[in-house]
Image (cartoon, rainbow, N blue to C red; front, top):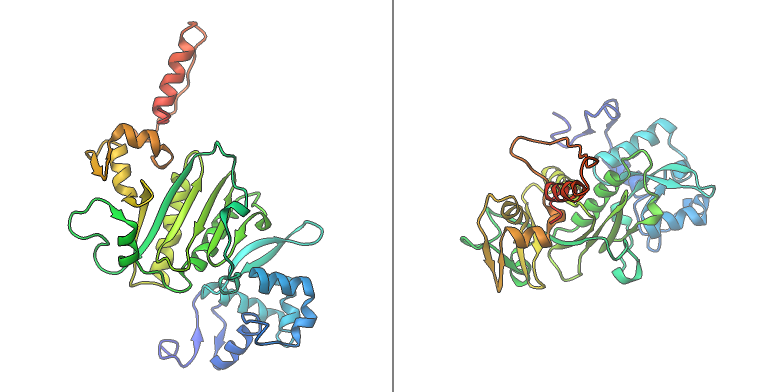
Length: 338
């Protein structure tokens, strides 16, 4: 009750259940010892942090949790641990793995509000090999029941600019969630192999990559997927987007669009419906999006489906010299490599 009235700050999470903050000004003071612009708010702790750690935090938005004792020396270790847990709970920081000078993994935090405000060009950071399939999507956020008017089956870039909104901090927090997902594997990719800024992010997922880009005057996020099978990356992206909207941007809705031409986009669900045969072909400008066209140009976005579920198949071609080609043809058909 007192938390709802704003008298105290309390959270029921297991790691925060016994933490009750009576003086919220104290909390703000502790947080701003970490989240601040050192050019405007210089602190004595900057000297204790060390030049490398300070640059990593305020130039890259990455905090090595082992140096928090130097930033907040007056707090006990238990209070510091709970303070970092509270930052994660409030979406002010996301847990990541960093590396020290010896190349060893160390726990760290990605702080979205401290990501560098830089204009990065994709050409400056080589991506996957050129033969890796490339799929271009657009994430649009909007308010209301639907983003398109009437029964419109596609959208133009101009319509996106007019109807989409992009709240301050949304892309930075989305990047934080995606990095956490990317590192949630037994051998997480080194965060130094990624490029993370407020306007451009290149995130490595195992052998695949996701690039998020937002022009300064744009009201949507452009996404490029470098993957032979992109449905898993799209699912991760969609879950992270829905999580953000459900917890911090509740008045918004989202739509995932596929770039068909430079100016025209189609909802991903519509494209997948055409690909799996549950929807008829549609006309988009001068193009006709039918089953064959979608499978040929957008196969990484199409999940492998069957009427009864998943097939476990084994192909044997030792009894006939022509069976090898037949087995390969069946495999390509089942995996939509047509």
